[in-house]
Image (cartoon, rainbow, N blue to C red; front, side, top):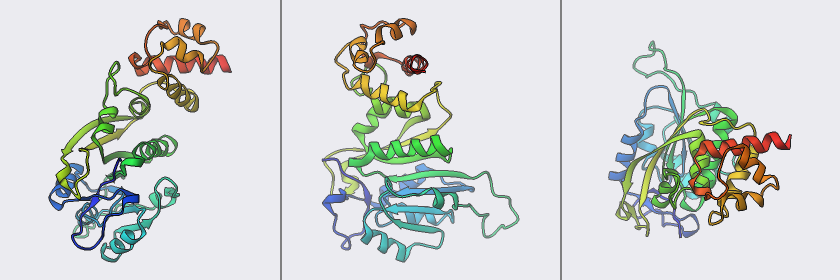
Length: 288
């Protein structure tokens, strides 16, 4: 079973199976904070702070943090020891309306140098994503970026197998829906590999710290909903040829592929993102 990763507090909080809690050791938490590289002008949304192994050293910079924790007991414990620049919200990040709170995260100048101007504001996401909800959370971050342009980057922990999918190349087994949808809106890179022993109790999987740098769309997408439906449709039948998988989605598949100058005998996982976008654009034009 996929598991979430959180901070370690020996002897206090017993890991809860329903949240998949595995606490990150302090030595590894320090490496994660170092990899984040917080800077003046940054504000943070942290997902799954747990007992604060990442939250508290990050808060020591004085930068504003909104930390969302689904476990109400952990949220209460963290709120009791967090400094004033940390806001704790006990909620499910997939359901919470975080936009008003994120808009209020305004970085301040250093307390010892009030005359120095604050650099351009950057909203950054950090945290240990619950493994069972990694894909929905990544989709939510893309949605926030696409709709509001708020998020600069995200440095997040996930199961190694999911990280493999994010950086997969066309023609490989791991290349699929998640690869395409993230690659359109973000540059993805691996930052740090963590063994099971980095957590207590150790999970049965390895973990990877990944950085997503959000950008303007890598390809032209006139209709985001249609593009997403198309990607899910063709990759849900990846063993079929492109023509056969696309036929189930649109009856004009043969004409669309001919217009896109694509061989219908190819497999969906061989398509470059630019080729998928071309098919989506032709489909959108045909439906209009």
